[in-house]
Image 1: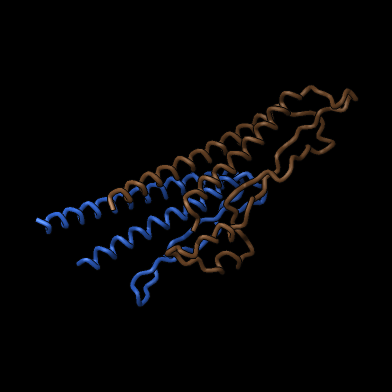
Image 2 (image 1 turned 90 degrees about the horizontal axis):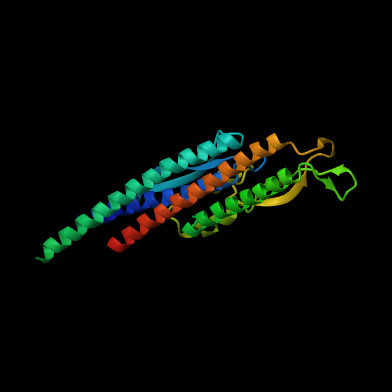
Length: 109
Length: 141
């Protein structure tokens, strides 16, 4: 039971780290949108099964957006979507921690 | 990968670059009817040429303790390298035959630079919100 809870927390935290990393890449896109010849990039996440369980893999990929306006639009839209995902995962982690605390308190009684 | 502070640094580099561009546009508009050194040579508009400030490989230097695998092929196979920051490489004059400052063009560039600046501010706000969430989780844990 404890291991399950730890695993669940681990997955959520992996998602949070991925969102944080992706935010950095998208920040670079937004900052360089007006740089001549700059091509936008993004991080793509994938889940890989291994002996240790589920492992996440992030890959840098090129974005099909050319020109300052397209790069900026892409970066801002992706940034918004990424922030929403981060916030949702943070909510989930908070809820899990709250539940674990309640179970611990209940066990103490 | 990139620590939280890097997002702030990236956005700040973008804001500084756009600020330089806006300063140049202001100077161009103010000098639209100026001549250079009283020799009847028209003032030439100047513009900031931006370039990526560092390679993405540098930004990945702190990736060793990340839970994610960044396959090296993803960074180099297609010969491209992402750039986390931006810097002004040179201040370029417009072409010699471009002649006078075009106020309309300057205003269009001003809007574009302003919009880019706003985007960087938005990135900063997003990173701040992420940090607040992370701090809240750390408080609960």
